[in-house]
Length: 104
Image (cartoon, rainbow, N blue to C red):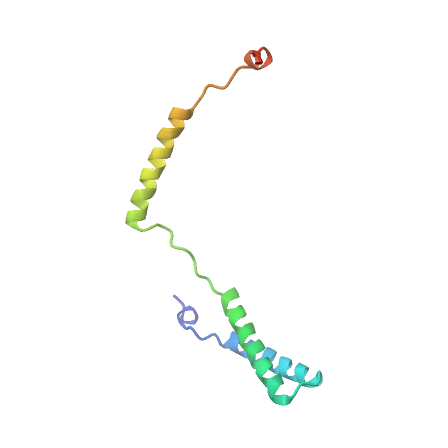
């Protein structure tokens, strides 16, 4: 694995979060909110933006194989379904049977 993938700190996302937080703070100040309230809302907005970016860039992949006990159970279920399908198979009617079937 690369060193960047091992690290849980992604400086690009933190920098973007700080920038968005600062823009939110300035925006709320220009809208007439008090300085502290704008700062708090800017911090919340920056944190949320940083969190969304880290989620967006995550490369977590699901496990390729199920655990052994689940794999065994899946094999059993697959065999049961195949045997049930073989029991339920009905021959498809031919064209003449469809055209001249008796209606009750």
